[in-house]
Length: 172
Image (cartoon, rainbow, N blue to C red):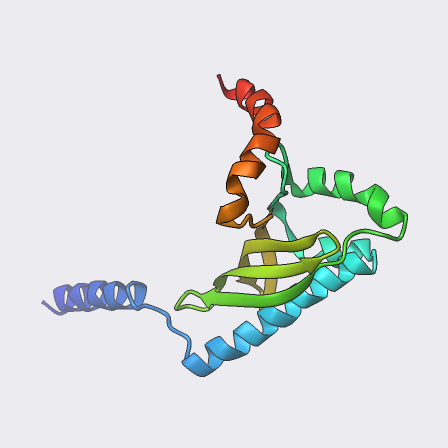
């Protein structure tokens, strides 16, 4: 009887322990958002200073960078290969956040964001996903895009139609 009670107690303990959700406080969420804000500003700053190590050390080994061209879906190593010559010349790119929204899961270990960026080519948009591992944020996924005003869409489609058709042939 004592053995059965002990087994039942152990099962209940495991059940309640494993299913207990983890939540961070609102204050902790705000602190993490400030850390992420700083992380992203430092990441963009590293590119503007052509600091290759600081830029790519913020990206996870399995990260993905999606550029503005439809063909630009790069693993970290592919993106490093593309970027290295720019960094070596001392001139990568200079993006500054105009505005940014940061969101966190309840456990505070995943974040996603969107940002409007000031660039030398005009306003771009970035969005991405970060993971906190060993008390450190790491970028796993980043998408760079060019927002197109709805009133300009017809003209943009005319300009890009030829290259879009060529790109889409790869999938037929």
